[in-house]
Structure formats: C-alpha cells, structure tokens
Length: 370
Image (cartoon, rainbow, N blue to C red; front, side):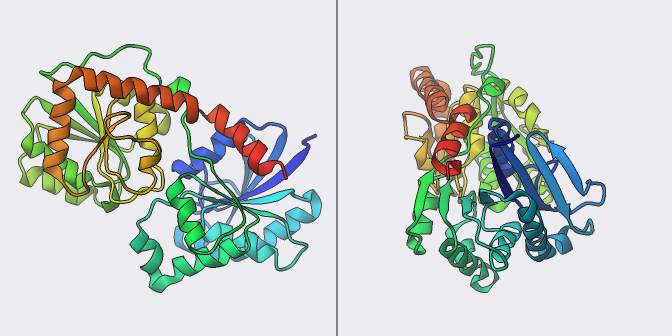
C-alpha cells in the first residue's frame, strides 16, 4: 500500500504530450512509493474516462471537445477532487502550471478542509503574453493562485523570480525539467563533416520559438548546410511558404511531428542544434540536444541562461538576428576546439544536474515530503 497519495491537476496529459506532461510522467514513474491520481480535460472522445499510465491513474473529465472540456475542467474537476479526497485523503494537490485544470484544486479547497497545494510553474510564454493576454486575466490568475499555494516549484530561476515579483513569499525551489539520459546519449561518436553539415531544431511551430529566423539564416549559409525542422504548429503553412519564397527547398526539410521517443535518433544524426527563442520557461529541447552531444545555439531569454554559458555550454545569439545565427553556425563548424569544449561541458552538466533520477529524488525530498 502506498505511504502517500497525491492528486495531480494537468489540463492535458498522455497521450497529449508536451514538456510538462513528460515531466510529470518521468517524475511519477520514479516514485513508486507514492500513489498518484490525475485530473485532466478529456479533449477527445477516443480517450478513456479512467486509465492508468505508468504510476498515475488518470481521470479524464469532459465530453470529448477540446475547448469545452478545458472550460469545464476547473468546475467539474473541483467536484471530482472533493469526491476523491473523501476516500483517499491526499497529502497534497499538485498543480501543473497556472492552467484550467489547476483552477480545480483551488476551487475544491473552498468546500473542504484545505489540502496543501503544490504549484509547478512550467510556462514558456513571454512576459507580455503573461501580463496582458485576455485583458490581464492570465496575470490575475497567477496572482490568485500564488496566494493560495503552499509550496511553489519552478523549472527556472526566471519563472521563480516572476512569481516573487507578483508577491509570492512562501516555500519555493527551482527543480528543472530533465532528460532520460540513457535514451539521448549518443552511443556513437559523430564526426562533423564540413561538406555536409546538418542543423536541427525541435520545437512547436509558433512565433516564440523563432523558427522563422533559422529559415532566414539559411540564406547566409552555403548549399552544403541543411536544416531539419521537427515539429508542427499553427505557423507550419506560413513557414513552408517562406522556404519556397526564399528558394530554400533544397536546404530545408520539414520533418513534421515526431514521437518524443524517436527524437533522439534525429539528434544523433545532426551536427548543431538551433532554437532562437523569443521566450522560454526553460527549454527542455536544448537539454536533450546537449545530452545527445550537439553544440547548441540559443538566445539568452527566460530560463535559458540557467544552463547555457556563452562559449562554455553553448553559444548565444540576439533574438531576431538571422545573420548572427549563420555566423555562430560557421564558427562552430570551423572551430573544432570550441565545438568539443562546448559539447563536453554541456554533456557533463546534463549528467550532473538534469538527469530525471536525480530530479525525482529532489522533488520527493523537497516538495512531497510534507
């Protein structure tokens, strides 16, 4: 019998996968002594109402409609949480981001003896978005949630400092997202061939991830430089159009959506990872690329400076500067000493600080040890 029970609130969960969902599964799989339940929006009719994945029993609420289920889950989820808590007496409610589902935890506590709320900040949106989107409702939601949070965790110092600026003064710590090191470590040593350089980016195709700037940068690189874009999103059509208008079809390939488990295979065949983000909560794709042995080019925004030191574990570029991206790419290709230094330092850092086994133990000792 589990010694402790925790109820998780996440607006989406497997098989709908993003960085936050991966983090929850990686941590919960490594803490078998804790019983985890999870409330989420159903979003699709093909998903079961109740299902166990790994160490988590999932309760999907809703009618199978993405928008409607997200709007309903704060209220429906609160009712479900109260009912579950009567039987299971949870040690904590664990909220993943300030989101629709996490609202259910705070509402549930209005109708019962309060269960301590652990809030994990994973947001990667820009400061402008968080402050002004939806007439300031996101910012207000943050402020209200922080007032009723017992323990706050954040995946980066940037997000933790934002919470403190909004008035949070309670117990807090930074616990970043990590990587499954065994999966991403490259079993073969890849030697960069300057006659056939493969650049790669893995990201959702949205404005904040700067994919348009990488495409623009390809204009300044020779024909033997190729770019693979892994991911999908609302900008996919416009980015494809941009590639055609710049006549870069022979240099850029859209790989589409790739299962998370298979991303390492593409990283192992590439030479340099690039993601010139405009905002970033942390950026797990960078950590995965580092674990795979790739030198990384990034922007010093959001949580990225937590793990990239310019010239030591990666190279920085200014946001929206395609020419500088091209310059840094050629610098890495031509300077093997720098390239080796960056990849060795980055891989060592990942193993020491970003392995999921270490992070799960840290979450257990610092957060779940209530």
